[in-house]
Every structure is written in structure tokens, then in C-alpha cells.
Length: 303
Image 1 (cartoon, helix red, strand yellow):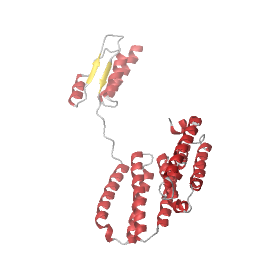
Image 2 (spheres, helix red, strand yellow; image 1 turned 30 degrees about the vertical axis):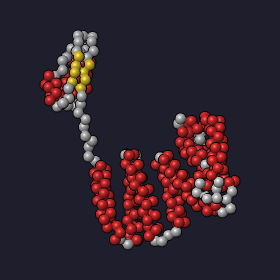
Image 3 (cartoon, helix red, strand yellow; image 1 turned 90 degrees about the vertical axis):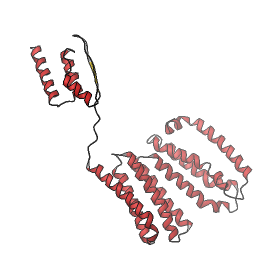
Image 4 (cartoon, helix red, strand yellow; image 1 turned 180 degrees about the vertical axis):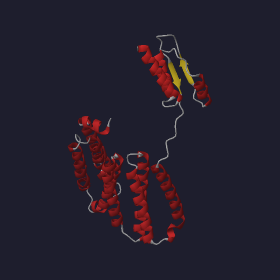
């Protein structure tokens, strides 16, 4: 009864092998398993595999010995899908459009230039959302193109319209806030780094003249130390729920802690010797603080 059942299974496996219902190496493995290595592989199939560039090496023995066969299967090309075709077509259209605009962009009116920048930015951002789960590398590429076009194109259009520095800073601030929001939507921490550090840079540029009026070192520190403490405090508050984002807040808070000294380098009234002394003191304080709270930082920064 057992032999009859085994013969039936072997016949069924051979049928699968002839009709290509299972891959060749799976059928050979099952045949060797049920025949205990006594059945030799099909010479026609072996020669066919060799002609196709898929060599197979088999080691067979007597009853009770296991047989191992190595088959190198040719890797199949991924099927052509509608999304793949759409991606190629959109990529070709974008490249063609960019080449055309590069030659004729200055001929357009300012309103048309703004419309072109806006359309391209929206297309890249929508593509980043579409490929967010299926193709993350494309998402990174489209996000980079989106922010590159929005920053460069926005500043170019504002200058063409005669906008002031305050308008440019306001526009860049909106983009930084958008980067922070996109970081939580896409789950990429580098977007949050870019957005928060961009906001800190804009904050420094906007407050330089105010700090330079009647400059004193402690007045400069009042603009940056509370901001650094606030960001670090937010990091400690959210380190249990989301250590990934808390690490970003902690690092940005640490960099803002040195913001006063960096800003003072661009103020002529600031004494360079005093800046060096303050930097030394802050590095020492930061080192002690980092050592005492190393248990948190190691998990935040994955050290």
C-alpha cells in the first residue's frame, strides 16, 4: 500500500516536470526525496539546461543517502505594468520639458514663469506621494527635485517681481515648515533636519541686525539658548513615543545652543576672543551634558 502511494506521487511529480507545472529543480528535489536518490535526473533536461547557460551539478548515492542538486535558474525580467509605463512616459516628458524650458525660459512673462515652476513642483510632489510605498528611491529623487525647484524658482520669481529680503525669508520659512510636515508624512528624518535647521538659519539671518544693535554677548545668548532648551525639552518629552523624531529635535537643539557664537561671527562689534571663550565653555558644558544623558542619546542617535 505504501509502495503504491509512493509510485503515484512519483508519477505525479514526473507529470509536473514534463508539463513545467513546477520549476525543474523543485521536481528533481522531490523525485530524489521520494526515490531516496535512486532516480537519475532526466538527461534531456540536463542537456537543455546546459545549452541555456544553467548548469546543474547532482550528487547521487545508494539507498539511504541524500542527493543534492544545484540548479542555476535564469532570472526573469519583471513584467511590464501600467505604473512602469506611466513612470517612463512621465520621466521622458519631464526631461523633454526641461530641455525646452532651458532654451526659452527667459522669453516667458513672469506670470508664466511662476505657473511653470508651480506646475513642475506639484508634479514632482504628487509623484513622490504616488511612489512613496512602491519605489522609495524615486520618492527621494522627486522630493529633491521638488524642493530644488521650489527654492530656486521661488527666489528667482520674487527677485523678478522686485520682492524684498523679508519676502524671500518668509517664502523660505514656508518651505521649511512644509519640509517639516512632509517629514512626518513620508517618514524621512532628513526632511525634518532640513526644515528645522533651515528655520534656525532663517531665524539667525532675521535677527542679526536686531542683535547687532547695542551688541552684548549675553543679549545674543538670550536669542538662542532658550530656543535650544525648548527643542531639547521637546526631545525629552517625546523620546518614549517616537525616539526617531526626538533625536532630530535633540540634535537641532544642540546646534542652536551654538547659534549665538555663529551669529556673532557676522557682527563686527563682537570680540573674537570672547566668542572663542564662549565656544570653549559651551563645548565643555555640552560634553558633560552628553555624558550624563548618554542613555537617551544612544537610543536617539542609534549609537
